Length: 399
Ligand SMILES: [Zn+2]
Ligand SMILES: [Zn+2]
Image (tube, rainbow, N blue to C red; front, top):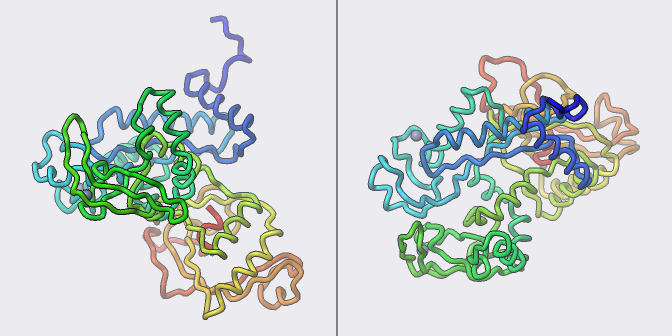
């Protein structure tokens, strides 16, 4: 062996080398290395096999190697449950033929009523595998991600640049398809199918894609469309990006962790003008990542938001409740449920009313006070009545 110790990265495996390359790249691009996210897609269109498990295991290995290099890292397990069913897998009932091209999250569970849908059954098989292997991950459902608008900005940007993207795909892979079609699959409003509805145009101002359900060749088989023409909005899960561009959209959308005051101001402004959609979360599965930072410059905007929200009555904000009783947590905390908090007061730093409104707070800093509306706590965990802290964060302000 000729390698000298200083050339060994981490534990010296290829996984360590990839982790090292990622860190170097993020630094070079001037991006935050605070929480480096690694993602693995969970196919939900068929029964998971060893290859599906292998993909998640490799991704988790990189996440562990990043942690080993001293970085905080998180594995996102993304279920492709908005994908359409392209063919009926061997051994599954024939009636599934009637659901070809429908999103797998809208198809009934062929195994009975153990899950809400075909897609949920398939992805839960893989999640069980990850759980039994002790792999830690944050779960994201494709359907929920699109429905809650998390990918809207990225989808908009991609559709505005579809020509450039089509050229790049043709140049790098030889695939000509996106020179002609938008990299977006609308779900036909009439027959509820993807892939058979071909996108035509992107209407920038309406943020909608026009389409015609004229059919397509899927796996060498011609599948007829229903003939309907219409348009779908891009912000509510009525369609999805093609796989080749969706990756990029997911990378960007999931990588937004806003520990900075400017990112926080962006969110508060979005809440003021109604363009912000909080990320989806699920009790028992999602985590909330706490970081420290100075948000002095956010208070003026927060006061504006408070005045706006209280114009016609009280401002009730739904907030996540996390496990544990630490009032100043740090890092990822598991969300165990949701509570509604009535925000009663918001004051900028130095406001004379702060002392009276925010008990125990330093009046020279900004303050915000609210009351938990006990009757509306919705739990998704925390069994056994163990202690848990109730702390409000406006949905989306701490992610
Ligand atoms: Zn099931
Ligand atoms: Zn149709």
